[in-house]
Amino acid sequence: MVWNPQLLNLLIKALGETLYMVGISLVLAAFFGIPLGILLVITGPRHIKPLKTINKILSAIINVGRSLPFIILLVAIIPLTRLIVGTSIGTAGAIVPLTVSAIPFMARVVESALLEVDWGVIEAAQAMGATTWQIIIKVLIPEAVPGLVLGVTMVAVSLISYSAMAGAVGGGGLGDLAIRYGYQRFRGDIMFATVLVLVVLVQGLQSLGGWIANSLNRR
Image (cartoon, rainbow, N blue to C red; front, side):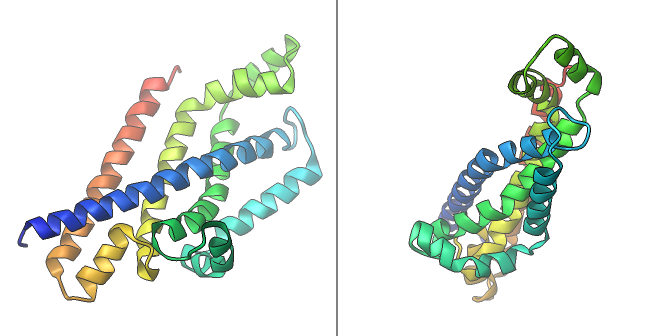
């Protein structure tokens, strides 16, 4: 593999696009997915605000969202993507399907983290007269922070993989670099460099998430 300024510039540009897509999508997914996950938990059977109908509807919607392969979702919501950002290609065009695919995933990892909170702590808060909102803000979320951090890390790693797939349809980023400059032009060095950057990025992100979660773990 021959390292040269041109290859380095291409990698830096593609990495920047990937981080931009993943970062924006992760923030938006957290904005919508975390409240959805909380609502899914508290409306569940034998929880603090059981609402069977709402819980079943939310669960069904989330399951449908998670069952759609990303590449199919990417194509299926092209009209919505164009409506929101004005284009279905490039980094802007990739953010919409990335966010839509990540929201149900985020909701499920939030649900999993919150369900691990010791029920005795919740009962103690109820015994002291805490409201539903107070239990969510002062008990559920603080107790679940390590699990939430690990869950968000998982979503971020998945978004990196999805962003690489978005490159197959002109989504920009490292996936687009690997397809257009590596595969289509038979440049094995670019393909190798792209894969190497993706591996380092994912490993670094997982290590960082694990370290933060361990640091915040009060148990």
